[in-house]
Length: 519
Image (tube, rainbow, N blue to C red; front, side, top):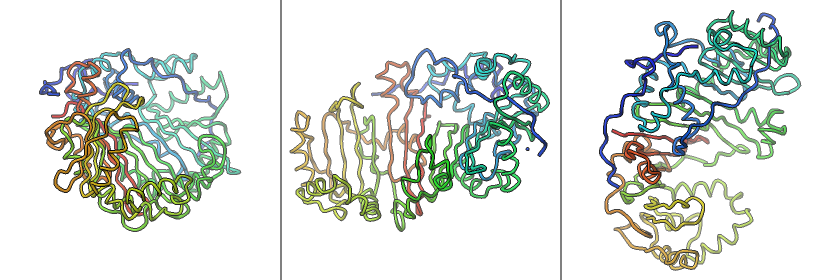
């Protein structure tokens, strides 16, 4: 198996050129032949140096891109195009996942640009390997195979997995493995089958299709004959088109899954029906753009017992609340209009909220503070709400470390928060947070804070670009984290941003992205 080298990069040297300096951080129909079961094997050994800031799935994707297996002698013929796994899996699928390591032209340019923006330490760890990452997996799972002669000549760069409800409501699954040479793929799988007959396979339409047995393979054909292929499923196609393409994609029909025998059985989807009458769909994608790595997960028409989390029109969002936090905020969370959003969520789900075991005690405590919910969410949260942590210790996420922070609540009742602050000293803080006014904004502060605005920081601006309409925004300063971890060139680590945006009819979109070496 061979992969194309990035544009304008010599083979075995991709990603080795240094990043330009950044300013310092100031702070199928025929009868199937028998086959062999595909057994997953442990992945490659972990990297020598652990960088927790980069998610494991990201490292895997980048490692594949950083190796010399992307060099290719068939660049013109094999770089772009080819069938996708959804073209050979059934339209009745309830769950679907794929990995696509064969980018389009636009994706390819983005991959190369993003790779060159990675911190030097990450590129050093990812680059320079001459080992095909698939080789170790195949050789451990199938010792009877010679990878170079039996696998590499046909193994493609796209992989898919689907689950559907088969005969007698039993779950059936299939794995689709791209086959660039169908004859060679068939020969290899037959060789494996001679050692073990744990599953069935057929090679056609550019893929090796693997299932548990002949009956499942026959059901795959039957499902496609009845429902067509998944790419022709209008709902699936619309959802995938909306969320966009990437290195890895996941899609699920949660409504269909919860109503199926699979959803009501023990296992990974244990008793989904007990949650209620679930309906809706989910899709997720991991993608690389020229400036950032992004994970996005969307929900479509999500309801429980016919009710969405929000009834009626969803209030407008925004994340301008983050802009006025101190410029040395390491972690920032907030949003505009959270008071209206909280009130609407409460009113839509009042029966559930007010019947919870702790509701009476919590409601009494709020009433003693002069807050009657849900009508007084504005008094409590203000119309824009944000908190920024300006100093976090090593144990910030687990030990109750006080840290330093600033909370800004535009339009909130300052008296309520003064009463709250007076009572916090007995709750673990040496002294309670200070409460002051900045115009109509109530400000709670504890510890140190910068004098500038977070919204004026270019790294923050680029990290959060395009997320302005979200209902909740999240930001983490990667430069601070890298500096605390004693990484060289901490300014190269940029920022991590996230957002949650709700939409009418039970829709939502959640985004998490990393923007290294922002320009």
